[in-house]
Image (cartoon, rainbow, N blue to C red; front, side):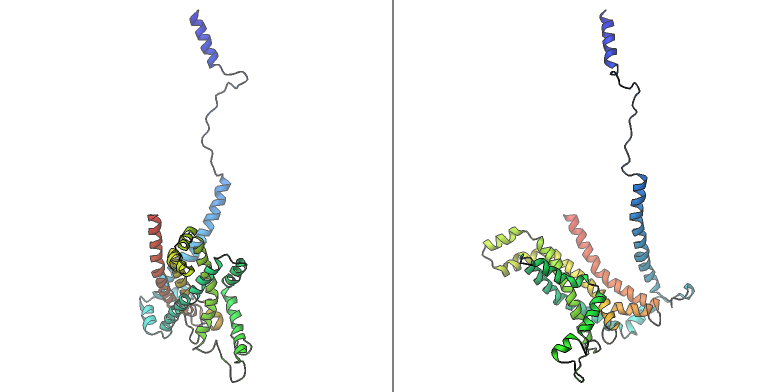
Length: 325
């Protein structure tokens, strides 16, 4: 009797509840997070820019490096001839514009690092004090960075106009026989263009340093003030040392800006009469009247090597800091 009672109770325990389906539910696998349409959309969004970047940047860069060892007039691929290092030998020995262009690029860097960089730091320090209308000042100082360099060149052309320009009108040099040709004079035009470049670069440096100052720990300033340090001592001994990563970025950015300088010079006088730059030589040899694509590519390779000599150490130091962190 007890055995039958036990059997019935076990059957009742294993019996499914009333109203429940008697069919066993098969366990479902993990649902896919992305549908086919999502994968297609992501593939297009990631694939199209990647293809364009590889095609327009990497392939063209590799093609330029290969063409630097050839002669080609750009008409048909059959006219490409391998010349080895002849383009580089001619560039370093027989081109009267190459070394002046290198010198001008160096001058460009020195001027940018000595004038707009400290000025941008000064403006950033003043704006970091949360003065009234600081947003308005930031917008006004950063506006030249937003404006296209070509537009900046046209604006400064009006300023330097020998007849109706602002500068000559102020100093009284807009009369016949007293004209100062700021753009045509080879002793003045490079410095005149550099003034326009500094005007733009100051806002760029201001934003970089302002971002660096926002990351300074306020407790450092409080501790310095408690020790009796004045504002200059606090900046020199406390704040400026903490801006070392920002200074590295500023240095690299300034070198790159000096090497890729092109727009302002091309708008002013197309790199003639004492304003030669490496980028101008590349353009004149590739798309000029006498198209020498191989020779222009050799100049571009030299410019690339100079840029890599600056960028690679910066990337190495950045990666080391990330690994140590």
